[in-house]
Length: 76
Image (cartoon, rainbow, N blue to C red; front, top):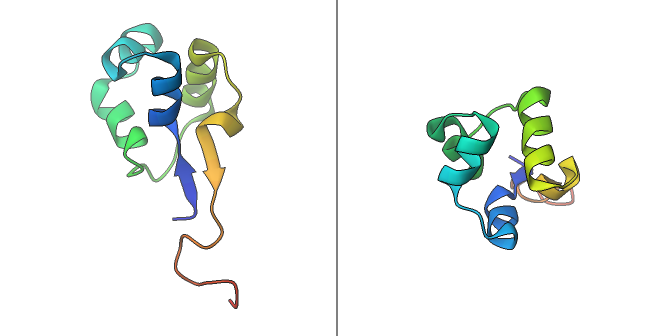
């Protein structure tokens, strides 16, 4: 999937654990772990908003688009 979640990088920059973030935003550890590992198929805007508020960041700080990551290359 060409959308990459960079939550782990943001947590490292904020010196915050995933457990601490879970407690602060009220999202389960399982759901945040799925998001952090890039296994999520979707993310709710309310979840993204809560993460951005707590981490003091923009959605683009948590998500990036990698055009070549899906394996199709630049010729597709």
